Image (cartoon, rainbow, N blue to C red; front, side):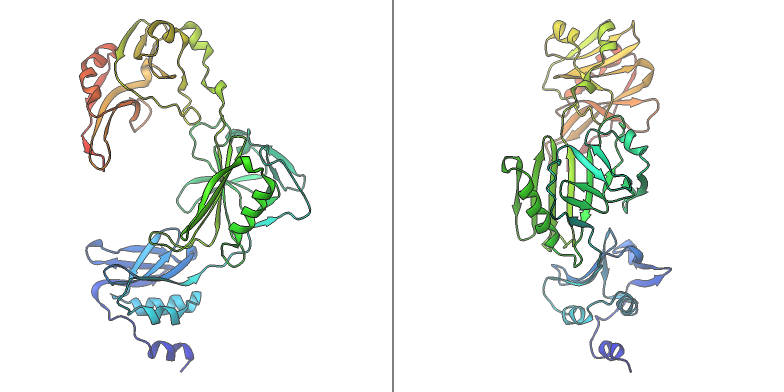
Length: 425
């Protein structure tokens, strides 16, 4: 009898029952609990780490992370057989698993982790100072890319390809390593989820693994960044037992690194997350001179209250500055206006506005969110002809817009309905 078989024979697994079943089929672990409880499918090709968990109720689980969290009950029928298959394939630490699985205490212990080749490198002997300018693609003919480069421009770059993240997100990746300052990154990516592609990229990211999957990656990156970037541009951070984080301001580009350890709500990721977010302002995107010069206010409705309108113009091309004609006539008042000459319906509050062709708007919805754990709120939502989902154009307190419902219908000559209320949980 092999050592492996003798080991399992001499150590007891939890007794199995009929609460559910576990089996491995076609490279997937399939866990089916009665009535759907604890049911999941684990893609074994994507397995990143495994833990033995005993929860607050003293119930043991095998925790498997395949970019999704899966808690596998150890008492389901077929568990022992499935575990033995997994252990042979991945070389689980069986001693840690069997030593702890029958304990009657809350615990969390790692029994396996996927090992990666290092996904970053520190450039020795060079002192690049171009962090705030952009990054360099290390293609055969190196190419420097400004942080001002748009989604559209990078999509056309011959050194990029599209892929799908484990969470089904569309991401843009670089075929070659890229350099940011004195750091080489071998798996640099862009979240390609912005509806506007004519603006500079808003979010870059990568996972920096060292060869052992430890916080050495965090310390390496922190040390080089603190050395290269002046102290006044450090944007704070924290170092706790469960997580370390530090940020840097690169003239409006926020570079941050974060490493997560085991904790009550976290698992050791084994990598440092490096994120670069674009917080720079681009006021030219807010200007629509063509419409501002010819706009006519044919009719209007003033709304009195502390009303918000989105200012996220980097994601919504409809968001513009408040036209000067509105400020001159109505000062800072919130307004819905009709422009019959140019066939428009407009909305403005604070310093922002949104303007639509009349035909674009199918109808309106007033959505009230009742206070609960959260404070609740009220939205005036637009339903566009070419979109499935409503989106809020104006926001205030719960039931604020109710009193304006008939006036909005009369002004816009559009249908208006009330959404089903729900609690802000």
